[in-house]
Structure formats: C-alpha cells, structure tokens
Image (cartoon, rainbow, N blue to C red; front, top):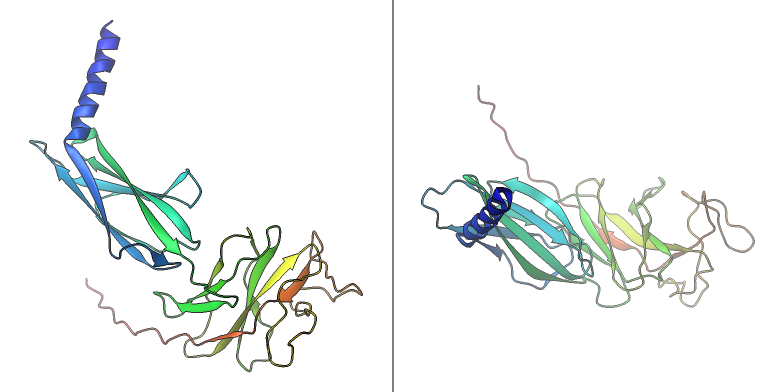
Amino acid sequence: MRFVLAAISIFALSNTLSAQLQVQVTPSVPAPQLVGTEVVFTFSATDSYSNPGIINFKMEVALPQSTTFTTVRDFEVSNTFAWARNLMEGSYQIRVTARDSNYITATSQTVVTYRINSRVTGSQPVVSATTHPLVALFSAPSCPSGSSMEVVFQQVGSAAAPFKTNFTACNGKTSMNFLIAGMLASTAYSMYDEVGRPEPASRRAPQSPGLQGQSPRPCSPSGCRSPSLSGLWRPSRSVFCCLALAPPRLWTPETPPVKSCVLRG
C-alpha cells in the first residue's frame, strides 16, 4: 500500500513540476522555406519554481509522413539550434523538451510543425548555394519509385574522370536533393543527374543542344561497365540503365573567407 501511495505521490509531483515549467520554440524564419534552408530554432522556458535550476533543451525531428522522432540534439544549456537537414519537402514535426537541472522530473515538451517546400518548380534540376561556400545543393525532379539517382560533377574543361555521389533511392513523389562537396574554390563545375532502374529509361530525353529527340544515352563508362547490345550495364548486383536527365548545370564555388586564429596560453 505504501508503494502505491508513493507512486501516486511521484506522479502528482511530476504533473505539478511540469505545470511550473513551460517551453516555447521560435524559428529564425517563418515557414514555409525551401529545401536545405538553414533554420535557427530558439528555445525559451518559463520557470516558476522558487529555486529554479539551469534549463537544458533537447530537440527531436520527425520526417514528413513519419511519426518517429530522431534526436538531433540532446539536452544541453544552449538555447539555439541551427537545423538544415531538411533535404525533402513536406511538413516536419519539431519536438523540444526543456528540463530543470534542480528537478530531474521537471520537464516540459512542445511540438511545432514546420513546412519545407521543393526548390524544383519545373522539369529541370536546380543548383543552389548553401551556408558553406564550397558545398552546393543539387535539386532534381522526382524519379520513378524503384529507381535510384546519382549526381555527376566535373570541373569544366577537365579531362579527368568525373566525380559521382552515391545512388539514392527514388520514391516517385518528392524531389531529389544532394549536397555536393569536394570542389575547389573559384573553379567552374558542371553537374547533372543520372537515374538507374531495372528497365530501359523512358523518361525525358537529354535536352542538350544537338540531342533533342534522340534516344537516351547510356551512362558514361566511369563507374559503369561497358554497355551491352541491349544498352544495359551491369553493376555488382542488378541490371540498370542510366540516363542523363538534363543538360549539365554550371556551378562555381566561392572562395572561403580567410579567418585568423590567436593562440592563447
């Protein structure tokens, strides 16, 4: 009986403590924003305890069409968090929990919805700047479910083999977004997307000059096997046909700002 009363007392105390601590969340820019936009969330809490401690904040995010929250920052004193891992359009759920260091059971939680829109408005890919001068965001229209997409990028005028991202699975609904890194400052690059799928590609033909109306071409040999008579090439596990979906986009990374450091003893 004493254990039951103790449990009830703890539950009642927890509810009382939660009522004395309230958390709020404020984004740096109002929704909606475009894919890849950095949003700084600022947390604040109203603490009505007679002996309040230090407030710690935790932030979790649920992807669009998902009810599973993933911790992006665990409890810490800082009341801001810069969030840019929004590489898919849709409505994200942002859950923030505040905790008083003097009362372990004193927590307050709130959930806000934040809408992210696609950068792609037509049938062509888009290349955008990010907060890092040497990283670009490549956004392409959706590709058929069951296929995969990669981005190929290369220095303009270079005879070296191009660089490629990993293949990312398509869902047939949302745009495809890739962070492109590893580029040199003040150097022009061309970028384009390639789609691999189990049957001959029948999406839009390349729109490069001189290729209008022609059949889709196979992937470049770099990273692929030589095309067979059927136009297919064989990666390690399954058969795919690749298609360059649009003319290359040109991108020139900026020169990063020079920062000086002072060592203090």
